[in-house]
Amino acid sequence: MTATPNRLAHALESLFKQAENAIDNGATIIVLSDRPVATHQMTIPVLLAVSGLHNYLVRQGKGTAASLVVDTAEACELHHFACLVGYGATAIHPYGAFATLTQRGYADHLDDYCHAATKGIIKIMSRMGISTIAGYQGAQLFEAIGLSDAVVDQYFTGTPTRIGGLTLNQIEDEYELKYRAAYDPHTIDDLPSGGSFQFKEDGEHHLYNPLSIYQFQKAVRSGDYQEYQKYAAQMNEEALSEPVTLRSMWDIDRNGNQPVPISEVEPVSSIVKRFKSGAMSFGALSQEAHETIAIAMNKLGARSNSGEGGEDRRRFKVGADGLNRNSRIKQVSTARFGVNTEYLMSADELQIKMAQGAKPGEGGQLPAGKAYPWVASIRGSIAGVQLISPPPHHDIYSIEDLAQLIYDLKQVNPDATINVKLVSSTGVGTIAAGVVKAGANTVVIAGYDGGTGAAPRNSTRDCGLPWEMGLADAHQTLALNHLRQRTTLEVDGKLLTGRDIAVASCWAPKNLASPP
Image (cartoon, helix red, strand yellow):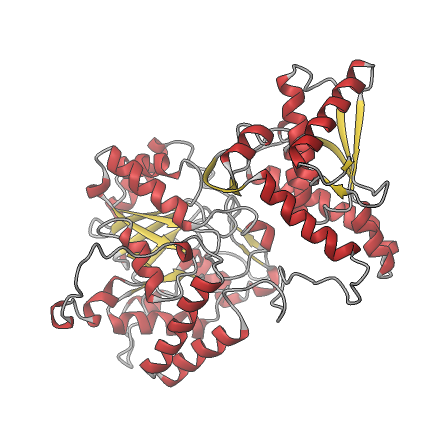
């Protein structure tokens, strides 16, 4: 599986021919190994080799003639394993991960590592509605982000891709850099950690880094607008110099227009009324934090979101201290925690959470230790019992079911607007069109980098998509179906500056965006 540093395409073609010849000669198991067999040889990227070979054999009518076993040092995370199985691998031997654990003194935990990886794949299958590994293996249930159309068409055939990206030559260049870093005789330091999981001074750039957090906290705590401007300037400058989001790659086209006099612009006091806080449940947040957010948003004339954890009925009316603790948006989710007539009637807006950008396909979860008596009573549950809301809306199998729920909610509270929360994904525009036809006044497109930070990385970055892609899909599909003016589009997912909100708003009129 190794090759001299010729063109990567030539090495892949040679690999495919060797595997096909082996099958023609009676082989039923093909082992793809990236163990070095000689000096001055680079390794073919393991996923590219597996997917490319699988699709090649399918095109030759031999896709089921042999099983692909992968012996690799490259795959070490759950998402790596899920991709390998999803693109055709039958078995995986992550010798690199095993060697690392052994070297660090964790040899006795190799079985635990395998068990955790297996459970992770089962979890991925379950949230996609797949019961057996046969339904997942080789199904290619992914979307490619950052790969060119030519690479995807040839080696990941049938995988949706919408924004282009790396060519085969660029992939080869990246692997050559890694090869040189590992085998250069002049290298005396340790290999760079990369900083993918945690911010490193010499690692990958993170939107959340010590300086950005410091600047943001300083601006909020001081209430000094100039401090916020410093924070925003730093974030916008980093977006240009070290882009990590799609919106960082775009410039706002002024079309030669001159700035509008500030006196003609809608005042801040009016604009902030369109802002909404993220949906964070009582129980996940403390009572103090949950109520403080509601009080602040109500003072602005904006809207806070109760989340799916219900809300104390005493908050539905202004308190004796004159403070309004009521969340104007009440969420209705799968488990219906705390949902009753009084709860629904206290809302100006009712949000049906079909899914969430962070942890798409999964439900909310409150550990038993956090199900305190006062939390359980509001949720209509029992103290000390773990609470889980099922993954997707298991009682909604069609647009007709959603339309029925919307109808029922409007019967309870005719004055409330209906908001349906969807995930940024391939085809979300078609779903949004059905949701609008079902009677939704507002559609939220949630990106993978939203949420409260409680989700593991393989449930966010490795599962969801950027909101930019979902918002564009929803806006264009609704416009094509003459439905755009019948609804308001919202977007959610790590909007950190005014520029982010402006970019989101530029996609369409009547567009709302949640503040940081």
